[in-house]
Structures are given as C-alpha cells and as structure tokens.
Image 1: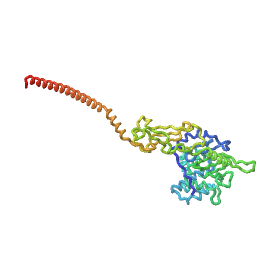
Image 2 (image 1 turned 180 degrees about the vertical axis):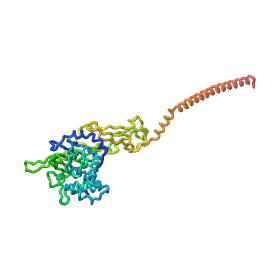
Image 3 (image 1 turned 180 degrees about the horizontal axis):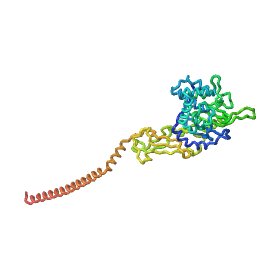
Length: 423
C-alpha cells in the first residue's frame, strides 16, 4: 500500500502563516493565469506560496468526494471499519466517480447519508475549513453547497496523512475504471506530472473545470487548487485542452522552481558566546542552536532578507554566569526574522562543558569573606590588639633597657667603691 508521510511543523505553521504574503510577493508570480481561482501551498505547514481568490466561495462539485474518502480512510485507520467493507466502493466512487458507491460508503461509515453529512461538516470545521458547507456526500449539484480553494487544500493536505486515502486517490485505474485525473497518467503526456501523488478533478457546465493536485518532489510537498478553468479547442491540432490540469501542472512546476526547504541554522553552527566566571582555563562558552531551523524559502534570497536576534540570558538579566556548565545547557535563544517578521526560533545551548577552577572559587570566597562586615570588625579588632601588643612590647623593651642600664651603672659604682677600699 502506497503511503506518504507528512512531517508536522506546528510551530513553523503558526509562524509562517503570518509571513506567507511577503514570501509570495518576493517571487515573480506565474504569468497569465487561466483560471479565476488559484491556490498553491506547502502541504505540511499550510504555508501559501501563491493565491488568487482563494477564499471565494464556489460549489465543490465532485471534489466533495475527497472528504467522503477522508472520513472512510480515517474509519479504516481507527479500526471502526475493515478495509474489505469499503475498499471496492471507495475505488468506485473516486476512480469511477460513482455517486451510488459514494452514498454506500456514507451509510457504511455513519449509518445514514444524513449522519455522514453531519460528520463531514464537523470534520471540515476541525480542519479549519471556515468557508465550507456540505449538504451531500457526492457533490451533486445543490445551491447550498459551497467551499473555497483554501479549504479544499486543507482537506487534501489531511488526506495525505492516511494510507487508504493515498491508495485510492492516487490510483490511475481500478478494474475497468480509469481515473480522469490525467496528471497521474503517463500516457497523457500533455497533462502527466511525474511528481503528482494524488488528486481530484471536476467538470460542470456551470462551474467550469477544477483540480486539486498533491505532489512531492525532493521532500517538498505541494498542493494546488484550480477552480473555474476552461476546456478550449486548440487551433493548432483541433484538440481539447483542459486548462485545469495544464494550470495545475504549471503552478506546481513554478512552486518547485522557486521554493525549497533550507536549513537556515544548523545545530552545529556556533553563533554566539557567553562570558563565564570561574572557568578552568576559559572565560567563555560557545553557543549553538539546540535544533536545526529549517524553513521553506524562495531559492534566491536577497541580501539582508534574513536576520537574526540573539539573546544570552545571563546578559539580558545582568547576571553572572559561573562554572561549572554542562554541554547542552540552555543559555540563550536565537530568533530568525525575514524582513522583520519572525519565521523561526531555537534555544541556544552550551557547545562544551566548562569545568570549575577551584583555586578561583577559593579566592573569590576568601575575598567575599574578607569583604563582609563581621570580617571587617575582626580585622579592625585584630589590628587594635596588634597595635596594643606592639606598644606593650616596645614599652617593655624600653623599660628593660633602662633597668639594665641602671643595674650596670650600680654594679660599676659598687666596683669602684670596693676598689677605693682596697678590697
């Protein structure tokens, strides 16, 4: 069973939605669009690369079957249904475009078409489809039915997360049924697009030709929606050209030509340093992003288009950062800006361990102890006692010297007196 895995970048999705317009504006738009409603978006994030009337409400026609298929795929995936219960009807409704099979799927999933339609609208709301209302499971004409290119892209993007959806929506044929989405058919060289994974086309007299196409190339997943296109007779060979498909392919090619995922900052990039006190042989530590920052950007970036803001927490708080520090410790943050709009951020971590030098620590502690008020009292007291002791010693030495001198003088006088007496 063919399966496409979509990586979810919730944070990037939130950040890039605000930057979608300037991103699209920075690249030259596709020339001479041949449909009134057009949308091109990156599937996993919802980031819009190009749009024209993407929120205009239109009848969804047979594209409703994408939601029918999505709900059935989710029911199979959750274990509510076994594949054998619905797979033949899924191929019949999607590849063969059978409305009867579509209603059969609705009854199998929800017990009735009415209950299934309620589930369709609830699921659409959960996906963020703000301009969609389903009134049947087939897409049969009904004036109350409406959706938008943006909402159809959301439904297709969610479908790409489910293997059963991919298997059915990406089938070129099944049994004697042939998928009219010719972007999947190599024999239809005018429309075939080898990177197309799945899609859905529609054609009515009132609404024109439509297409929702999902493609993947070099890890970049794009979904495009074309609504209201025409089918024209070419004078060159009198053949019919379905412009919903030619425009879808052209828009996908434009997207892959101009956009790609770029690792703007890698987790091995040393982009800042933080001053460290008491380090053993070092007085700073290098900082690097905790994770890669990968953004969807146009292939040619203008000089100065991307800038970064770096915050080292110790500096921001005016606090001293001291050793020891373990590698991987979060010490800051980097924010990436595109023309002043935030498009990504990552924590900054210590690149290496910083050991504590104990001699520096002892010296600091001693200085701190000596600088305290109690220490000052002790030092002053010691100084006073030392001075008193010094005075006492000096006075003792002076008095002793006098005493010795007197004794010597007395001894000398006594000796002279004995001499005078002839003793």
